Image (cartoon, rainbow, N blue to C red; front, side):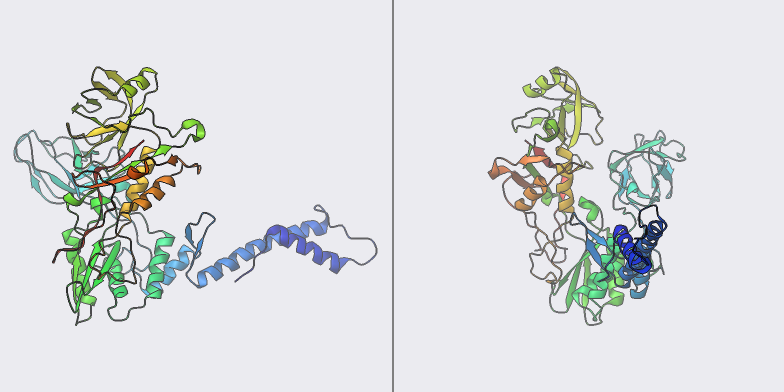
Length: 520
């Protein structure tokens, strides 16, 4: 433990030293701020503060460790340069073949869109580039596609060439061809999102990866070894790390001598499920490092649409900051069905009276539309109402993904809707696959089930950027948090994933499109 001193403390110590050392007579020496000794003491203090910082950083870099700040957030005490040196010593691979250290940004995958075509049988070759509206994100087609029609019904699969989370583009994003093939329209709309891209590994993420390696040295095939191999493995052909975000290990799940690994990708929702190609790469790598007596199987988690989560929370906004967080109107807890829609309007059987009154008062009230259409976000679509004419409600913002008529619906909107929904989604994206089989590694305890009390904590702890709590209460208590699976009915029950099918990975909970509702 190294004790450090503030500049003022060092300054006062220096003054005390000068007083003792240079006091020669009855008359005291001048130690005021502007005196020679005062200025000298201040200079010493500033120099030694800088020296202390270097000594302290050297001590912190000597052993990889983390610390907790005043808000309870973990931070790395070790500098990035030292972490990279430690990663080299312990052989932690980066995203570049043959290089050890922090992982770099990754590309997004899984994007799908249907190009428009004015000619029959137009060939769109693999590698054809498109860009988003900002021009900052470039994507390209994965394989050759020959259109049919017109109108064309053949889709193209896309992957980004731009790296980092900026390359995660939601469904509904409009891309433009850099050089459109003859007969192909200049724009293409994503019907399935591009997802899975990550930014540079943070200092804390690299530190945690390093500590797992140090604290769990390889022992010839323990569960910790399989997790390390999964998360730090590389393509056996190219040597490039393929980037499994999390490896969950199940010793003996398929019988004696077996080890199952359920691999998770970074991202959200279905984006956490690795592709079949990635699972094949992982399987090949695990086969190359496993003990010869073990049989290892790599799985993607089971994520069937029939098991997709829906969550409804009832949250009452606090009156803080002049009711900033309150809903814009009172829907009485009743949803209104969308019977028809355009790009920026919806038609209903009857406009809620409270919504009409709020609009008549000039408030431009917000609504939250729950959109279940494929490719939509689980977060409610929130927009202000700019006009009500008969049964048609015009919105300020165009839909990113169109709602499904006679199925989707809306509630009252407000400032608390999106922040709460995003926190709920983040929590579910942090869950791991099912532990129901009892074979999951007991030394690696991840949370797998959705528990209502955890959702209550998450909702109640939702804060504005200045730290102001946004939620006053969640009433009525019996239905404060309700859950449903797929198209099933809401009920006040927890949800646990299953692990019951041989030859299939354990189930992983995820939120479906339009799966989060925040009502008053």
